[in-house]
Image 1 (tube, rainbow, N blue to C red):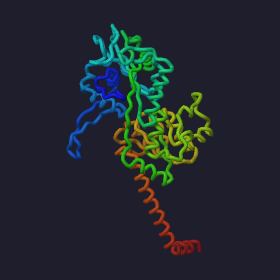
Image 2: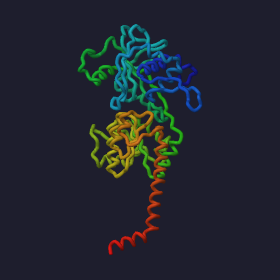
Image 3: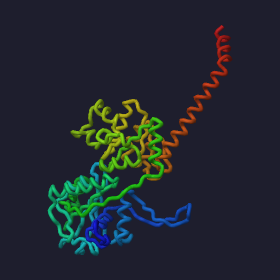
Image 4: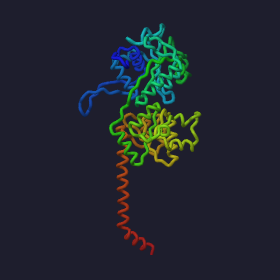
Length: 388
C-alpha cells in the first residue's frame, strides 16, 4: 500500500481486485525458449492489455491454475462501444472470493465481473469495496475522487482499468430465452456494480519509435494516433513518442472522439475536415470513428496509410489508400482488408520502407531524366524523319 512497507500480496483489496480481473481475462502466461539466446522467458498469450493483470496476479501468489477452480458461466467480450468485458463465474459454496479476499454474501451462487474503462464502469457502480471488506454506497463525490486518481495515472502514460463485481443468487435473466441478445444479457448483469479496484499498467515505447516519428515529420509525413485509450493517457503516450511535441497545443492537437459526433451524429463534412486537419491524437475512438477520420483526410487530398490489427479495423484499412495490417497480432480479417502486412508489427519498419521507396523513386526519376537529356537529339531526329 502506498506510503507503507506492507506487502501488497496480503492486502485484501489487492487480492480481490487481481483475482476478479483474472476471472475476466482470457490471457495466459507461459515459459518459452528464446530462439536467439536459448534462454527461457515468460511470454503472455492473448490480449496485451490483460497481460499485466496476469503478471501482477502471479506476483501476489495466484498460480496459473487458479482460474480453473472457478467455472465461467457467461462471457460477454470487450467491444469498443461498451468499453468493457463482462464474465459471470460460479462461486457457489464460497464464503470469500479467495483466501484473504473479499467476503461474499450468504447464498451467493454467481459473481459478475466487469473490467474496462473506468469512466464507463463507474456509471454502473452503486457500491465500493472498503478496506475491511465491507461495502459502502458510492456517491458522485466518490466517483469524482476515483476519476481524479485515473487522471493522475493517465497523465503518466499509464493505462487504467477498473474492476467491478456483483453477486447473484441466480442469473438475472431467463437462461432459457434464446431470443435474448448479448446486449440484453450484458445490461442485466452490469447493474448495481461494486467497485473493487483500479489497475494501472504501462505499454513501453518500442526502441526507435520516437526517432522514427521525428524522421517521418521531417519527411513531410503527418503521424496521427487513433486509440481507444483515455484522453490523458493518449496525450502522455503521444508526447513520449513525439507525435505531440512541446509546441503543440493539447487543446487543438488532441481530442476525444466524442467531439466528432456531439449529438450522436457525425459532424458535417466541412466541420469534420476542419477538425481533423489539425488533430494528431484521437482518443476513445470507436471503429466507425477510424473510418470517418480516414474519409475526412482523403477529402483533404491526403494520401492515407492506416494501420490496424482487429476485426473492427477492417473497414478503415480497406478505405485507406494503403491499409497496413499487423502480421503478428493482426487478425485474418484485418490482413485480408489490407494492402500490406507488417511482419514485425513495428512502426519503425513503415518509416524505413517509405525511405527506401523514396530512394528508389528518386533513382527512377534521375534515370529517366538522364536518358531523355542524352538521347533527345536522336529522338527529335527520328520524329522529324517520320513527320517529313
